Length: 255
Image (cartoon, rainbow, N blue to C red):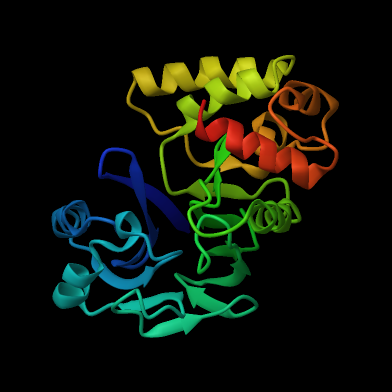
């Protein structure tokens, strides 16, 4: 059976570790720091066989060089010369087999132009989405446009509702504070805030989420909702779903 474990790093990043219970070989996703990965591998006598990279930002790639030098893993990621060490570049539409699961490569520009998501159908479906989709939020637009990010999120919305969402950061509490302003009449947001508060008080991760949950609590996935549009209308254009998204993202940036 495949398990997925978060390795906390750099304050609020998660490096995701995949492993089969019948093998010491593991895969890590977005190792922004090598040290916590090496500590876990050595402590549990595991072998790093694969690394997946979703995009070029340093907090997702910073540990890659040290891990390559120490373990020589297979490295899968965007075809971007800014990322040193990728030996299996992939593009949207490709498929890669990792830890016994077949992952589909999904286009995800917006946060960065090279951003990819990796989705494995099956039981359960798994989504490693880096900084495209967070619980109750989405990534800032460092390189792409609101239209690109809106389209990227809509691609993820086509995945099954029970998809487990493994995002790159523990941003849920701050995102829910914004969601309570952007979707003020949403009882699911209020409930999620209390659940999140309890989890963080116990130092438990709020991830993975599910796509079904995100459809209920994430204002960036609810741009057609009348309540979200009403709340956003005083901050900008809400004439369309895409315009509402752009308004929400700009509002969140200064929230």
